[in-house]
Length: 190
Image (cartoon, rainbow, N blue to C red; front, side):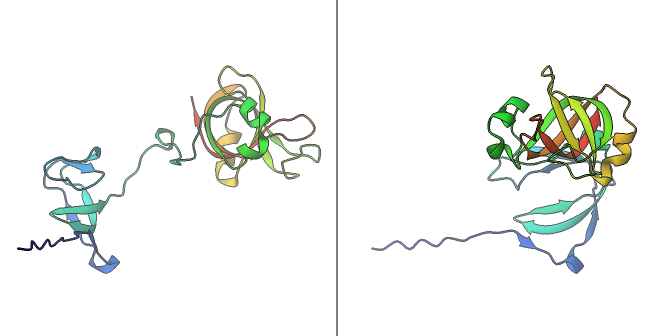
């Protein structure tokens, strides 16, 4: 006698943009990372309050994937990147090529906002940058290139302000002083 096994692949059914309806939470509800498997729910990542509006993006076995729009303080967020690694300036200087492109999150002390001149290799002439010390107790010099979107925040920093930065390594060892140059992604006052 033969036994025939039939397997069903269950996948989330995505909805098109025009079919993505808006719903209102009838009661407080946990937003989870995935639908429950058997009776084990996945971790909760947020909470919907009663009356919150969500957009339904997909359906899967009695669950719906939702999008929520809202506002939070920028200082409560950090860049989500799996490349975020604990690197010190010494790590970066010891192997500049390997550090290039890595994302770091450091607590530094902002000394002042400067404008790059021709002597600052690794920075473009006229480019704004924060001269900083750190991270943490390490008091090494660091150049943080400031993008236009963060320029007003950088201008408003008083001298010697402690900040938390997320930055991508542009040059691990600029000439002639060997100062790391990083591209600022976000900054938060301590």
